[in-house]
Length: 211
Image (tube, rainbow, N blue to C red):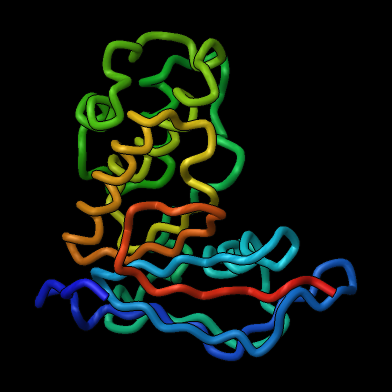
């Protein structure tokens, strides 16, 4: 694991004896993990093993069948989900709104905006398309606009589900820079992926094959 910043070393995301049941099927059971500020945990496994379900449980979008999720030494007034960014397969953009309007909506909705929209768009190389309708973006550009949400609103936990999907080589490099900066600031990353993310060294949680 990478060395933790002293100011963030007490933050810790913990999953204890987690179980997940979907459609009457046991997806996983007895799953436990612990990841501290400044660290990344890579969630791997075949399709159907529960990678996305685990991220959704941490985000508070899906109830666990058993076990608990906790965030130690963090904001006690907010849930784990409220202290997390969840980047899913779908980019959740409004096609009729411009690039900047989409990002401003999420900034207003999520609250606690820390970085101006213009700066966040520049971080993902979309500043020149700020007034462009989101409906005309390519798949890679849409993904980068979703990544800009992580920059605009500061939250300690990033839950990334196949974050490199649709990104070209330059986009992957930008994502790597954003992730390294987040970890360097004491943040936590849980990433479900089938391929390398350039976060080595990182912890790994491998989910088994579905029955």
